[in-house]
Length: 393
Picture 1 (cartoon, rainbow, N blue to C red):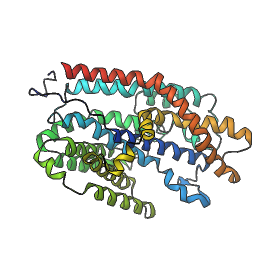
Picture 2 (cartoon, rainbow, N blue to C red; picture 1 turned 120 degrees about the horizontal axis):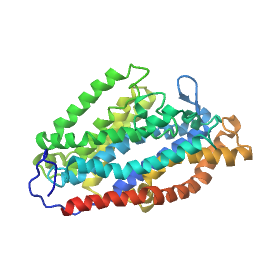
Picture 3 (cartoon, helix red, strand yellow; picture 1 turned 90 degrees about the vertical axis):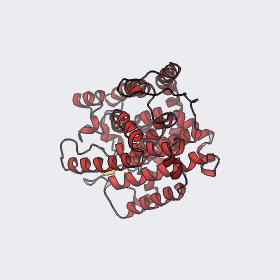
Picture 4 (cartoon, one colour; picture 1 turned 30 degrees about the horizontal axis):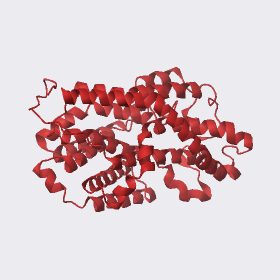
């Protein structure tokens, strides 16, 4: 078994890869939730210096505006999925960290660059003018915006975080976490998953508190997502690891713990708390859900999350996440506006949202499926081929 010299691996029997449908379902649900939330914001855009959402009498729909929370679920899910083969290989990163980074680069970066180039073209041409919709936060596009996005550092600077395509900030967050993953794998193997996870939370919390008061740089840096990623790793270790400690943790009431975390999260929507608290509660909810379903995939929630339409959405979830925002704006600007459904016009808000969800979304999914076939699937297959090559070495 090949590996980096810095991480000697004893002879291991590589177990067959697992494909867990419920994880596809979680990914599909989260990606579609983000798309629905941005459809809502197209009709009820941001207003005012405090960044409050203008929902009027339709505030009941406000839960959909929490697309940011879906990113927390994505991060936990990523940690859970990437740790799965490690947990099944007695805590070792098969192939070493260089191979891991290579596979992750192939899997996400070319697709991201394709979406970035398309978004730059759209944001500087057909949807480059402000129209009073949520898309306005992504324009105008400057040279610095382009540079930071290509270097995957756009989330570091508050002024560039939402530019070009307002969902791209999370890609740079996850890309940097990948470089921490091998260190966390080593810590999990050496010390177990409990203390490394706790220490990661403490360190990230200290850094977050130190950075958030700088208005020009780093204040938008979501360093605490590394801790949520570690939560997902811990969840995967509990379900699929073989340690005695993991066996004891399997007996915890994970479904109830996840439910309590979600109820507490709902409470934070009424009583405002720092975003890091909300993200942590969503992360705990997602971890509890994944552990509970992972331990009992045939439970009702597992069956729902394994529903084929959700799994299909999960299959194209990355492409859906990357490309839905500019496509929503194209439809609104060139289909709805000519029909008299003017953005940011009080009588038309609900009609715009209705058309975007029930008319535009099926068309957008068709376009995104073609994007997936052209720009994601080939690189996903390449990444899988790299994995098989390492496993057979």
